[in-house]
Image (tube, rainbow, N blue to C red; front, side, top):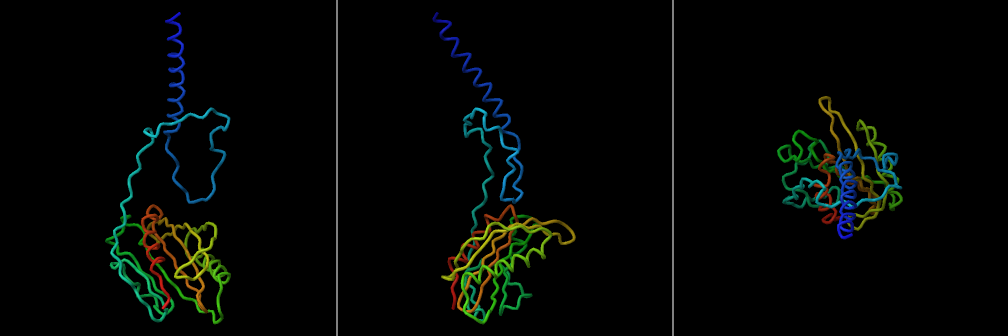
Length: 231
């Protein structure tokens, strides 16, 4: 009797372990890369009637840590546009922008986190409407810019539009994903687009970075937002 009593739980534990191990094998299959879509293909979800099995976190792969940004910032001031904000001091001001209504800072090639990847850039544009502007006007302008950007990239997809503020001015923003081919290779990018209303003007702020490194470069946007001032 004693031997039978001790044997039964042993067999039960062995069977549970076998089931768990098989499920772990399925869970260890490669996870498809994020395509940038906001939805999920529910046809690929496991059968909801299956018995759930707890997975020990030790079985999960250890992700490669992303290096923390270590930028040194300086304050950029533009009297013509009536704004100032912080920008990494090594980033280059694009001379092709007129700097009266548009400015763009570009990351030096030597500092790119993705070798031979897309050069991250931060763009600020001022649109003078002539009349006092509201957050609603900012949303209309945002939707217009989305249409313009859609014609500039090979593919362009946006997320949901939500409210935002910069420098005390209110407006709207959205995230976007895009691809672009310069004739030699394809680039995959993610970005954030913001438009806010200030007095009679609308200001657009846009950060575009390599898809795989967007979270890293988002530090630049957060610094701009926290330091942005209207002069």
